Length: 296
Image (cartoon, rainbow, N blue to C red; front, side, top):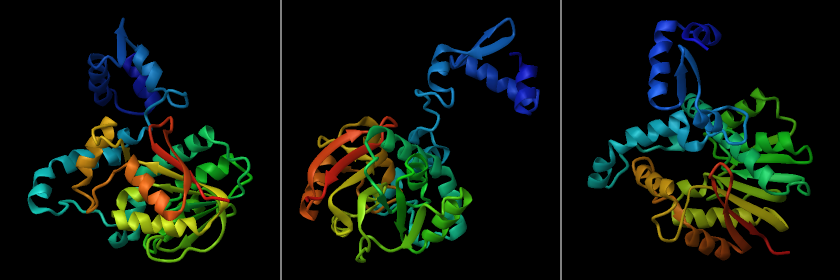
């Protein structure tokens, strides 16, 4: 297509769009032949939505995550000198509107993780799922959309659950997703579930809080039930995967805890909490994953 037709299709001004198109040609994401723009092979492979190889919703291409990583990197020296996160992020102190805005950006990541999890493992035998520290509920929304056999419960702290309910109501999922206010680190949890998922929870907790949360979650999983931990996980060498090494550096600017943690640290906590059959793998979206079971 030529510039004018692309601008018309996108409902944007031609003079504002044109510099972007030529820049994408130099980046080898578009081809220009006879004043017509088209995708390169690479763009077709990775940047066309709704295809299996699409990476546009990869966590590390998320606008909010990219902003955190870029802006945080400018504060790394300050954080190291002071010993305090220069841009500390505290879920408990955020207003409802601030959390809603932040979760609007990260919700697509959680939804994709839920889809990838269901596509990678057999969820057909599960009827009840608990999403601990589930934030806006994206993972539960995705799983219950794909698995009509599952009713989900999202557990999070008091500052977060009003926002969770808002997101659940927005997609009409209140009939299949319950929202419960509780602190998984400090409070006994109630209910019995076939499967529990902890996505991006362990990664923002201190080591002792991570262990305590796993002990509490253990009590609400049925015997023989399954636990999935999703998110940033380092190899024991601490120098791979590469993106996790750099995420750990960036995270010191936002969190007090030294996350992400290593595979061995996860194994140690899981064993202390009572879990067995611990296995590590990766989802297609590159989320780290650890799967464990509660003994029968």
